[in-house]
Image 1 (tube, rainbow, N blue to C red):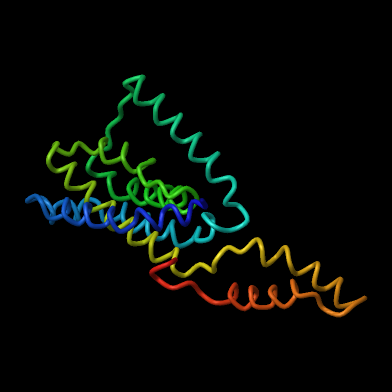
Image 2 (image 1 turned 180 degrees about the vertical axis):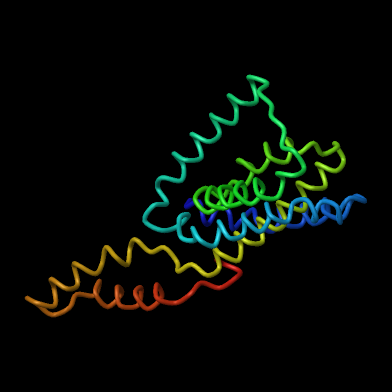
Length: 196
């Protein structure tokens, strides 16, 4: 299963639980005030890198994800920690958001490097849990919206085209070529929001 389709399957339950987590606490206003650069950067990063999940570079998404998870695990196991001063939260948050957006657009994963950043700004436990809900709601909706704008990946269509061109030069078009035309028409259409 392609990563873009797998993400489409989990987006709805993820959004539901994240929205519940967003409003299940008293810190929403403070979270938005502190994390808006992170969230804005993530949305921009996802938008700028749209197509990484289903385009020609999609095959590298698994490699990127594996490397990031290994780095994240090493940092977690080594008990390495850092903190970000309140005066630097906004500009660092914007940069972390852009990187998180690029990673999310390529892999569908939004925890690296956003999660270490949220831990580094010194949120209390309950505030951090609610902040994760707010952030993942915004990031998941941005990714879902971006996926609805992408054309359907169709390797079968592109595989038909050279064959049909060759057949049309020397012989009458084969039945496969007429099916390729229908496939090409379908490929040129944008997918529906339900099916991504």
